[in-house]
Length: 307
Length: 317
Image (cartoon, rainbow over all chains, first blue to last red; front, side, top):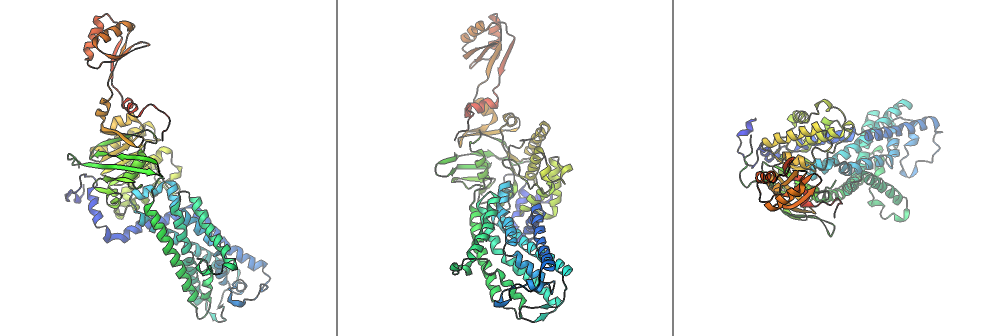
């Protein structure tokens, strides 16, 4: 049937023995194989009708913001931009590119985390609920490998969600407002080309800010077989964190919250770029990923699959 | 390609396999199961007898509380990555992504196997679809499939590659009679090629038709295992005589030494124990008993199964 029939028959059973020889060369070709399941995972995430609905909703955020600023904004009435706080909103009417920054700032506290919470919470629990988890594991996908692919899928969604907001904002901004050289928060002015690069960096920075939450959602997802519970818990974590941030008496724990460095992306609109806060934010996200990733792995590898 | 079914090789072997849920519920209790290589093995048991938990432990989905599982030639769950590519499974019904097409569903499961060759993936998927007769609807979303089509898609995923062992839990569930027949033919064909088939089913006549060996579980324990013939031999054939002369027949049978003689509405039943049926028939006729029919009823597997597991309908814990 195939040239490999000439191989020594090591097993007691024949029809699949020729594949057994393939397993030994497994390590040498790891990347293209992960690629196969990864491709499938991306298709799973992005072909799901719910994902399209959420991305559509996110694309609508800059539209609402742009229309509100274009037609209902009385211009420069909200308090001054003292204290270094990011005040993109008043800049938008002068330059459409600022709608990208304003939209990301508006979507980051709740809309983006909400959608990431849904995708991350559903990642393992959804498969368990549908029963597809048992078939993936029997395939055998491998528990660690499946968890890695699932996490990568959630990260891909984080990036896609952020880019959806940014691109929608770019289109809406160009349509409703003048485009041109971009004044920075520090007073300098940079060209549109330079500003575009900064916009890309800002989008990446925002996407990276969601990684810690993605890891939390992944861990919660390994705990249950009810996807809605995992999604609600993950979104609940975001809400609780926002509440904790609002209580000044708890300022001691604020630096440890995964949301604490989220607004650091505003620093990319200064010249020279102060990197301290950005690096600290990335560090926080990395720490949350390490802790909750390890917890998810421990749970995933021990779990009895009964659904 | 036929299997080298050397004496003593087992496709599945468990030793003292147990699973405890919580503190005191023993779902599977000290199972010593041997599934000979090349057999079509029927796995029977009432609902809640621990079959599913056992199947999940065999496939490394559930970690045993104690005991060991050897699947093909690897210990489970340790050798999951080496062994499972050679095992196809249908566990507790099919499960699919409703928003993906049948072909995309199979593509995903094939991609999940790290030892499968991505270059020949499409060909494997098409072949598996053809084997279960789903080619025509392969591009339709799985959500729109009927119960029987979903079942076929589940079987297709088990057949993505040539397998050494197929673990099929209720494979004909939801299929129409033609579908059941096709699946049975498929199973026989695979078995003829040397694939060991581990078949869990409630349909005893199905087991009787395709299986060579059988094991029966009840209350988490293995009650018996052996060939289908040996299980059936455990319950004796029964003599059924239709006659208007029941009283006379009872006298004759009693004189001949038959036991457990019962008069029914239209005749007599008895356990012929030591007797040859032809002698009994001749004796009845000689005694002027008008014999309208004379049957030695072979016990069905169902009789054997009920005899082993009890008549009770209620699920026991």
